[in-house]
Image 1: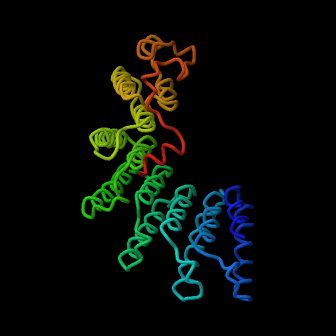
Image 2: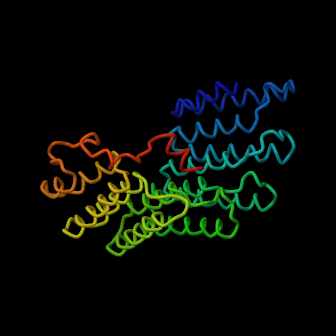
Image 3: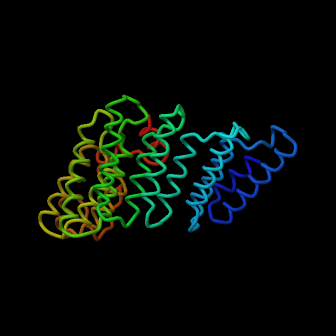
Amino acid sequence: FNSVISAWANNGGGDAAFRAENILERMEVLYRQTGQEDVKPRTVTYNAVIDAWAKSGELDGAHRAELLLGHMMELFETGHNVDAKPNVRSFNTVLNAWAKSGVFDAPVRALKVLSRMEELASSDWDDVLPDATSFATVINAYARSNTFGKADSAYEVYTYMKEMYDATGNIKLRPNNIIYNSVLNACAFTMGDFEEQSRAIEIANSMLMGLDESPYGKPDHITYGTYLKVIANQMDPSPARTEIAANVFQKCARDGMVGGMVLRQLREMGMADEEFEELVGVSIWKAPSLSDLPSSWTCNVIEGKRLRRRQFR
């Protein structure tokens, strides 16, 4: 049963989520009728169905995911299924569902889930204590939303997490690249007046410098690419914008962190061809790729799963 549910969860789409939950309901009925351990839904089973709803794209997908989380808690607290106790993955998957939901109040919903995790953790539910992924996902909920002031809100979530880490030393709360990059992403997609844009740039500068000086990580290709997106989105075309982009790209190249996103964002910066060619060594009209660049500029780029493993060490 678990393998079938996981397969549907990985399949994506609303139909997959409905099918996964139908299988879960059949398991619950069979277990109540027979008491057989091999059909007993466990935490991993429920998590897979929650994940299916997070990936479903359904308008009520996040709501369905959170309802299922509440069902898990009720089963555990009443003793009807002590093997259905939610863990941090259960909550993080619900957070991800809200972040992806597109619902106008998704950040508020995500913050409520995060607060609930903290409440439970203070009541001896140690396995639901929020971790860096929890906070990064809440920040991502802000980044994906149309909330006014989301750069400030994302920065506040980061600051709160950092204060918790400083106070407790809990390694699971240690700020990593994903946290910094998530705040930068919120800055990149901030909307509003000049003051709002200026604040987003100010926060982005703080995050880039903070990560560069951090003992826990250094700017990677995602950091530099996202920062360039901040500059492109929040500054009007001007010599000052071009100069900032050039300085950031040069540091990125020195760090060996010029990845595909960095090069793409630089091309979209709107530089004159001669400015771009002077910086990169290739005309923008030739659609340069990473293979056209010196290997020393790209040597430290790590993509995909290897990047995620490195960030959460």
